[in-house]
Image (cartoon, rainbow, N blue to C red):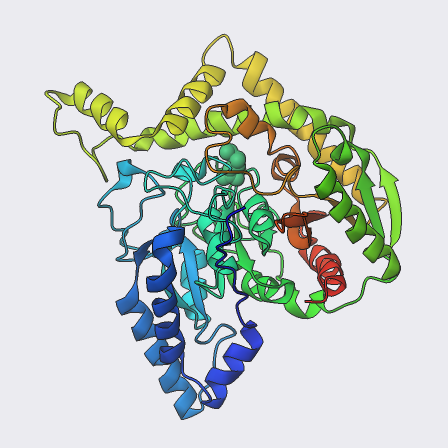
Length: 484
Ligand code: GLN
């Protein structure tokens, strides 16, 4: 293990905001402090793809002015945050980690980004990720891999690896990422931070560059559960520009997370503790479960039998939707256009050939195949049926328990290059996260011990549809047991 570590825990949002409100510090000073940290450490970590310094300092100045006048401040007033580069931010280059979008400057903010700004957050810049959020290690970014602050020879996880690494190295107090099959939970676990998969429909997808629309979710990363809950509260809620966003009222997640866990029923599904689970990860999670029991939870062993179908189902649904979503990148409307093209058809072909990386091409091919005439019923339709069964199985399980606890990933962070030659091994590592994605339920990953080598282990706490408050409560209890 490399001895160099860049880990630094961000200060809590409540104390930073209090400092800005009282005048003990200013949002401008905070932003400048973070830009200095980024300048010092980004070369080693490769987290930020673009900095939005001008906008950030303007926003910070507005917060400082409001604080000086005694005006009411938003819940994230002056808090420096970063945003995964699959979300649009007006006037700042958006790449989705791909060459094909090179030079694209979106003319609008994603709803989640607009809501962060409205809450007073200072957005520092756009953060590296796997190309179009396809991957589990951040090695599929066209702009080079992000490195894990705990060990620079290891991956931060993916696809929101940069968003996780940014919080772990305190290059942002909190960040936004996206999760289609685990892309918030797995990197949060690998980097020792908190990550949230909101229920499908909880957070607007407007302004999210789509990978698989029926699975894609936007969610926060933070250094502790309460801060993650605060961010989710800000970005959640109905949006007329996303027809799949829910009109359900948004609970006060941060306050809810303070409630204790005594008497809660926690389900432990046996299928998540079988072959392939690293013994050190298992041990850390079992210690976490014991801590929940000590805190007054009632532990119940349960079974989720359809789990073994989740990986093939996910990789059919996700690739099929990706092949349709990525058809829009054709060199006509935005991004890269091949200079070699001689006619319209070669312009399409060459622009896509030059613009997309290997993993994205693999997925477009897989997805197009799964949707093609003659194969549709055998693959895509069958996958949709299995998906329904998986979702129903979770609904059944939540009739008997308040939350379900599992490891977030079967191993701690692996080495850069370790799985790049074997896409199947990379896909199989998503085993514990793709189930909740397919079922549409929510989850929180919270640090839960380390391996002997000092690498973080994450515990996944799953809640039912729109049960984020419950997942936060349980995650909070695990966090307390770690004595954060
Ligand atoms: N690792 C999974 C994949 O490669 C999940 C990615 C994601 O959640 N965006 O598809």
